[in-house]
Image (cartoon, rainbow, N blue to C red; front, top):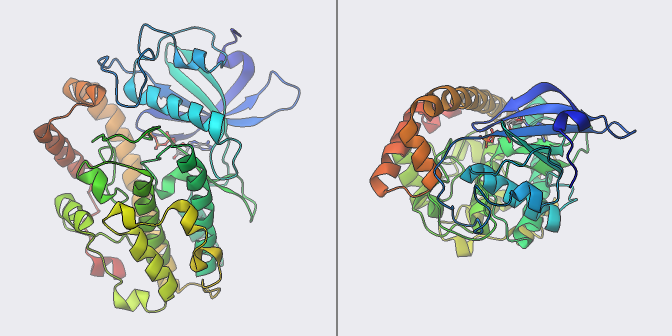
Length: 389
Ligand code: ATP
């Protein structure tokens, strides 16, 4: 086993972004002649209880052989991984490295290092920006452009689903362009909440907006690859209208609407969108997961192929709504990330133990949902007509 430190191999520079449990920095590989640019995601270590979460094989917990070591990645110091979420991301990334990589639409993992501060994932650098940022900055945006995006996400999903991985947190901010060129591939990333096998786990939906969460995840049914297809349906609805399909005065109400599959194609906006696109959204936002198309099936859909998608420039109103939606989403994400790290984790020991055990009672789950709704839904209580304005 190699014993290098991260700093011996990589020069780490500016922060690219922050997540609730992580900080991502730019890095350059200095040990080899060729300077490879990478993203280094550091997952912070928390002292969580040692219940083995579902999907994590026994023997991968604290005090035993480190997962990074079993992957054959270099480490300078063996510190057992003891955080359930942190362990899960590495486990899923290992499965991706073994079964999916390299894939044009799925983030690649190059190296893993562990030290006292946590685990550092050395990832493929995506410098092309987030999905919605890029779309709203484009001079030309059409249905055909949206179809190209869906095609790329569906290709990535097909690959991970074939490897029995469910992403479970698919949303626009987890889709990044590899580079700034016009034909840049779009990469699915952030497998922090993903699962290698199907299992029921109420943690999904706790960490942010419930906008993209499927009905079966909300009612704690079995989460499968079809749950990712629901999330893609929500992304597509927003791409073509500039507002989300489920808008309510409260998160509780929104949750009910999602579970009932209660959305509409508000006439004013949707009359100009092709019926083929609307038919596709309806099939993705079907409450019964078995009736949703798979990612592979999506790749044969006439609108996704591009045959029935309009080439005309998208209505300016839709683009401007998408801009506003994106700006609000970014503000909320920034507020949420800082709240999560500074307030929740530093002050709420109870929450730490709840998250660590993955074993929440209905009442505890409800309390947490309400707590997070309050944090997350500030500014998210607009009605559909407000969005339209
Ligand atoms: P978490 O799920 O851990 O709470 P998160 O979902 O917000 O976090 P992270 O994966 O931690 O997302 O990434 C945080 C931010 O860092 C992203 O929003 C993105 O801007 C940036 N980032 C992450 N990975 C990369 C990458 N490979 N290349 C470029 N930027 C990245």
